[in-house]
Image (cartoon, rainbow over all chains, first blue to last red; front, side, top):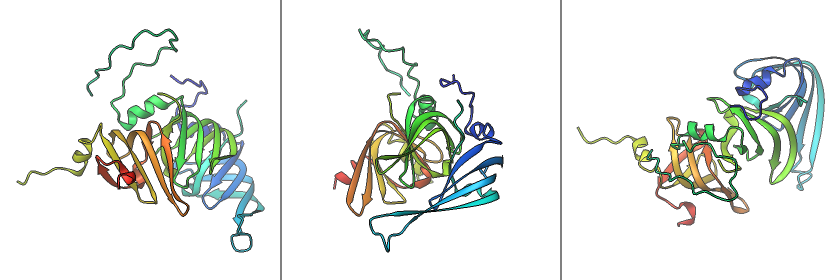
Length: 94
Length: 98
Length: 85
C-alpha cells in the first residue's frame, strides 16, 4: 500500500524517526531553527538542543526593495510551542 | 454515487493499469487517491510545497517527500522529507492525474 | 413544523455543480464540487483560485483539490465566481 516504501504510516512517524537527529524547523514569524530533537508531542511542542535560530528581517523602511537581513543566535536548550510550527524537516534518510 | 463509468476502451499505449475508480468525491476518498502522488500543498501564508504525499492524518498534518518550497513562483528550499503542521494548510491539490 | 433544510443539505445538493467559495482572507475559489465532510473540507475539480492582491486579481488553475474548511467564509452555489460579475 505504501508506494514509497519508507515505512511511514502517519506524519508523526517522520518526527519519531528524527529523535536524536538534527532537524530543521520553520516557524511562524519568519523564524527558522535547527537543533537536535529530544522530545515532541501531539501538538508538535518540541524540545531541541544545540539550537541555532535564524530570523529574517525585511527592512521595508530603509530598504523598500525588500532586502532581507538575517539575524542568528544560538541556544543550548529550547522549548518550541507547537502552534508556531509550520514545517519540520528531518535529516535526509539516505 | 452512481458508478456508471464505462469500461475503458482498449488503447495502444496502455499505461500501467489505473486503480479501480472508487471515488465518491468525499475528502477521505480524495486523500486515498492522492497518497503516493505528486501534490501541491498551499499554506494560508501563500507558500507552496510541491512533493510526493507520503501520508497525512485527521488534522491535515502532512508528510511529504522530495519537497520543493515555492515562494512567489521561485524555489526557495528543498527537503528530502517534510512534516507540515495541518493548521497551516489551505489546500492540497493533485499535481498529477489521480 | 416549517419544512426545515439544514445549510449543509443545500451544499449537498450542489455536488456535481459549479460552486464559488469565498475564504476569510482575500482569496476565492471556483470549481465543480465533488464532495465535502462535516468540517466543510471540500473536494473541488477544475478549480480556479483567485488571489486579490494590490497588483490585482491573480488566477491559478488547479486540478482536483482538497480545500481546508478552516478558512472558508461563504459558499455560493451554481456561480461562476468573480468572473461572472
